[in-house]
Length: 154
Length: 318
Image 1 (tube, helix red, strand yellow):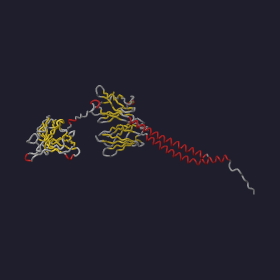
Image 2 (cartoon, one colour):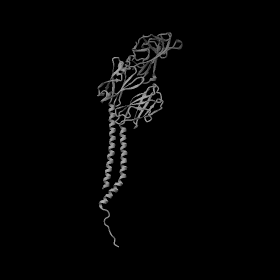
Image 3 (tube, chains in turn purple, green):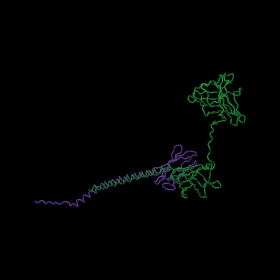
Image 4 (tube, chains in turn red, yellow):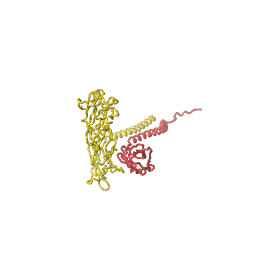
């Protein structure tokens, strides 16, 4: 019996293409994992940058004894545009009254304001009647958790 | 080889993305630090108000930049007894940039004409900059001026109806029985020899109240050594009225008051008094005058009276 020896297995070009294909296919999951990781890290730094440049001040508050509505003037003094979503008002007895924008417990003249601009917040019903002469503490927070505190005598 | 190239490409891509994100954050932090620094340089004051001819409305607000950076005025507020209101953002109709050390007069419009109501007794006007720096003053301050603090007059250091004449303050040698030594004149009392012995003190006071006053025998002159307050010495009143042991001081009258006794002067049946002996060593003393007695009210009644006059300067025992 004569054994036939075929000396050619794959052509060099085909072999190279095959290796390329295998390496590329194997590299795809690595690429996806690494880009995902990078995107997360990048997103973290971007958000951190936004938070670092987000700053508000409560400029004035109209909260008077016997009046159950309140107006708060907020100025954006950071580079990030702000959206206010939470307000807390504390009477001297230590209780905390919470107002959320999602629950339509207050309204703003603009949804978002940029650096240097003023936002007027109206709370139509405080849910309590401020006492004349008492000191109230107000805290206003943005969607990213940046806030400011103000004390006002009703 | 191909795999190495792919790997290198991936690593560099990741590094570029990560570094760009990190440097973006770093830039943001630096930017915020710059904003905060600029804000710390801002300082404004409201330097004046301009009223209309009827003095009923504020038509202009003058703001001075006392900081070291250019500011832009972005809000004017007014707060009175009932409300706090945003009057306007003057930057929407006026160039409100103010350079350091300069002032700007900003017109105040309102819907019905020019100006906002002028409420000198209870309103406060405030201004705020773009960086959130605020200033405010009572409106009346610019019309009535600030309340001047009372002038300090060192020779009139008193709270009460009796005012001490600081330039009339003497001591004199006495016997143990309290008899004034005729050979030793009244001597200014700001300093005296130590271990001086029995002595009397004399001060002049003026009744600056509109009521007459009678002081009683419990009124005293107290010398308290600064270094050892427990060694306090007291000299009690030598009353001018030797019947009731009191001294009458008419309204707007200046009288001399003499202190001699180591205890409140006793009636004959109570015993005998002795003069107080100056036994203090070399020291400095704070002096307090204490008065007890009655006011003679205009309706004829009498009400209790008490007063302490601390000397502003100490006496020295040398």
